[in-house]
Image 1 (tube, rainbow, N blue to C red):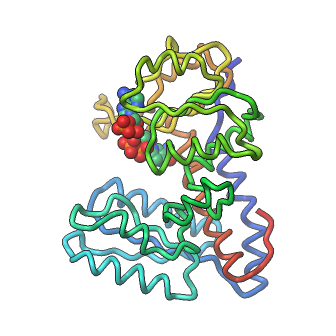
Image 2: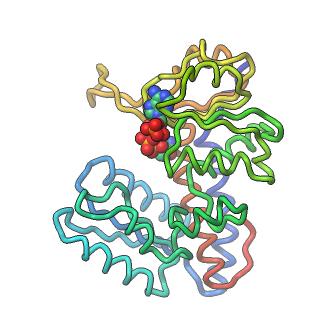
Length: 296
Ligand code: NDP
């Protein structure tokens, strides 16, 4: 029987687990606070930010919502980040990406105080992750580690193949897999659009993490029996539904499930974990900023 890993259930356990830490912080006069900054009128970005706000409210994290006109000068965003950096009540800052073309995205990531960078994308935090001394693990790959742990998948000594090399998913995932630490110790291959014979790589894998953003590109014929499949992709494809589209992953679920010992669905797999780990990082930030010991 293939284990379909329930990301919603694991994410709920993560959120429940934050309750005690939030109570400990409250007893010390601290309410974890996340500031989200949205400089976009893209409906998907707006939805992501409002979901993050709702998640915060559910667990008792205070959410500050800053919206900037997408046509405003870049300075407005940088000034906002500076103000949030200086605001002692703010523990975490998240600037929703992508920002408009006239704003230098890398400069935005560098502008955020690394201690408040709960996405883990500031170069200092990327460096710490690579060095095996992560302050905040980026939410999606961290969530995947938690999913694998919940599904009793030991990564040690396994052959892991990560399809995709983005800064937010593929690269940090590969970095976590190669760490000399629980959830790591995997022999890791990173594939991308220039990889030759991707199927040969995925077929040789014990664990496949698909993060390419190509609908259902990995099917059962590209996998070996017993593989663990983690599908990160969220792709809109035209469909005969009320909205006119449906969401599919990077994996063809039905044929992959025939081969897999464990697999994540889309939706309901990695997505909820990404959101839960943002809350986790925000609570962690609040604990370290207030110098209060919390169990996470
Ligand atoms: P990017 O577009 O930044 O990166 C995609 C990567 O996949 C690139 O490295 C690209 O290679 C590689 N790639 C593209 N096509 C192929 C191919 N045919 N074969 C092999 N590799 C390929 O995407 P993200 O990492 O930001 O996101 C990936 C997917 O995950 C998207 O569907 C996104 O929506 C989803 N996502 C889901 C999250 C969640 O919480 N579930 C969170 C973040 C993202 P190259 O570098 O050569 O261009």
